[in-house]
Image 1 (cartoon, rainbow, N blue to C red):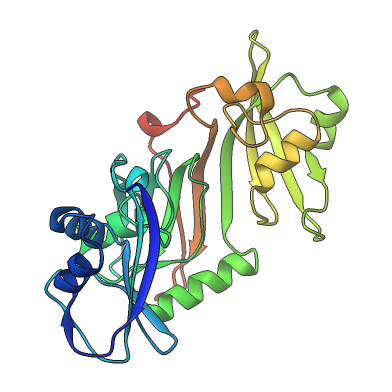
Image 2 (cartoon, rainbow, N blue to C red; image 1 turned 90 degrees about the horizontal axis):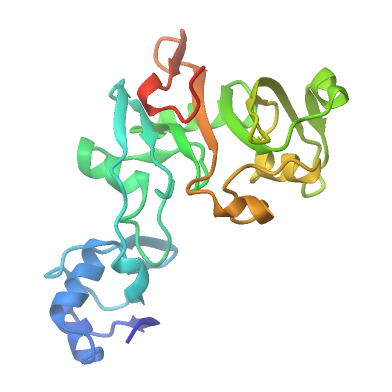
Length: 277
């Protein structure tokens, strides 16, 4: 069996792994325990839902137990993210390409959120995202109030985010002089500002990009729309998708510390960068 999604309303107290094994004899206990550890089993009571990882956990009457099993996802592995700055109530990480910002119904072992939770042994809250295919800096919170403060800063555009991006082709003089793309996405105004760092003989341009707004896939969609898709983009890049990795990297962040209200900033260490001057 490669993929299934099942849920059960429990009417009497049961042990999670025993119940799942009885309901799904086609899956061994070993596979079920692995799915639990990797975040594919959920426990719901009312509107509250959480991942259930303990095989011997008791599930009470009135609770709903669910399994979202995808053998392909569960067998995948991901490179470990690295902790770059730890302020206890929040932290900054380097997320490698291929690592999700957060998990899905089908598991969270491929996500930065789970990696950070395991490494820090603290609660972890996501306050912004970075595409799975992209790499670079990501800010996480470890406290609910701090998470709310940082999330608000991102929503209000108070966090400065700089990216390095390689795009297909050389930009025209008019595009370079303008230095920005104004194009609505999903019915909302969007602005992407950029500077050309280097144009290669291979027909690739390296850019420094400053996001003024934060729509989904904004950088990738904007540059594809003006005829210069990001190299290695499997969704918007057409012929560029043969590249080994998405050439989009978050290299600088600056924000206001929720604790002492001072401005904090971090740059991605040079050895981790895709583009070097």
